[in-house]
Amino acid sequence: MLSQDRVFRALADPSRRALFEQLTKGEAAVRDLTPRAGISQPAVSQHLAVLREAGLVDERREGRLVYYRVKLTGLRPLVDWIAHYQAFWVERLEGLRALLEEMDE
Amino acid sequence: MNDKAEETQSISMELDLPHAPAKVWRALTEPALLAKWLMSTDLDPVIGKAFTFKAPSGPGWDGTVNCKMQEIEPHTRLRYSWGGGGLDDTVVTWTLTPTRTGGTLLRLEHSGFRTGKGEARFFQGAKMGWQFMVGQRLGAVLAEIA
Image (cartoon, rainbow over all chains, first blue to last red; front, side, top):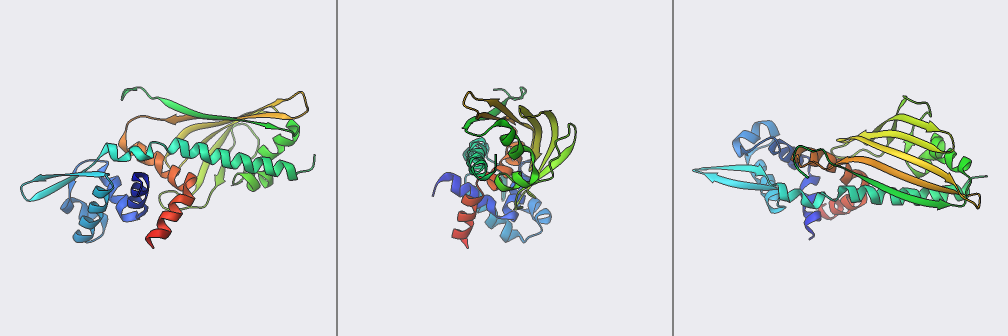
């Protein structure tokens, strides 16, 4: 699977996206994330595992606690979103060209 | 690029069209025509007037592009702000130049994409990107999961 697809897949889930957004504000442990995420602790852990596999979060162990934080390099596949925008305009302008053909002078 | 300087990027492209500027202008400014090739809109070609483009909504973004008309020079130039889904302060400029053969050289510039390093902003900007520009791809990925 492409790294970009892995990132899309990880963030396609609203709960995971909410967790990720929360982590962009700072490092947090599962217990800090659970009350705000509105889902069970095991579910939060599972979501964090998916985010970690996608390279979007890093973990740091401190005693019995594991702290999670956003991994900046994990967002690299998305840097290209400007290129996606470019693709959007290329496609739409083809639509414009087709429409102009149909329109009366 | 450093953390303090606000760097921006733009996208530009040109289309050589066999149609007169007046006709191209209509396709760029009439909502009924815009809906056919771009998105449904309540665009009103009046400077300072706010309007929206509506794309299908999805996770992270309601599909609304918020715009404000900034410049109108009939059959020549059209400029409006373009924001939404965490994408702010970008500007779309259309420039129409008549060609010798009676056609139009249409130039699109979409400027103001901020490329700062802030993680949160990165994410905000990318939200719209996924949904809006790679909707089909995301859809395919989602279908695969289901």
